[in-house]
Image 1 (tube, rainbow, N blue to C red):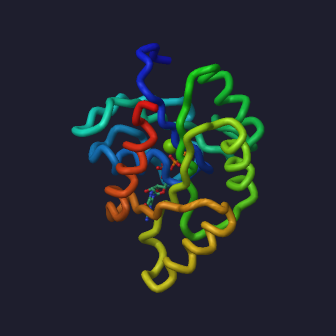
Image 2: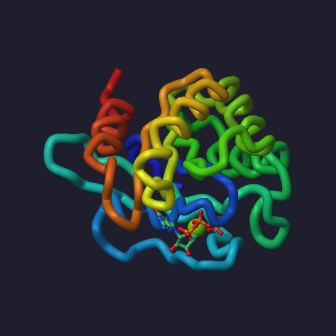
Length: 176
Ligand code: GTP
Ligand code: MG
């Protein structure tokens, strides 16, 4: 774990939701390993990101929850994992959810935990490309009402929403 005091922005979400793909899409490089089978990311991987106009920071790719092998079985186990990894370090986090599946129990549990333990947090709905345009608005409305929080829609495949996500990240990493 680095000790340079740069901000950490972690991606938190179910196995296979697309966390690693989102990192690759954000930095436009194939850095993080992705897979069609859940449970690809077994360790926390930190990527130091330098981008014009924002302070350097670390994107943290984490194993997903909801998949026993390698990752955490439940949001609670996940909580123990992050506590052991980050200790007292200040962590910002993005909850990554599937745009097609509003209100999955484990996602809600993760968001509840984030509200208690992570000061700077936001929600990203990915795989928006899998929804027909006509269905997107309703899906987002539903997600925002379930989480009572704004949801940024993105696609790692088409790049939709990534500029807005960069703006969110810039805000998260801004010195207080
Ligand atoms: P774990 O490391 O197992 O927790 O998974 P992960 O959340 O890192 O998921 P990963 O990025 O490995 O992607 C899982 C699968 O979803 C892969 O087959 C990706 O190609 C696919 N995928 C990810 N993002 C998108 C997206 O925006 N659109 C579409 N259509 N597929 C996506
Ligand atoms: Mg992964």
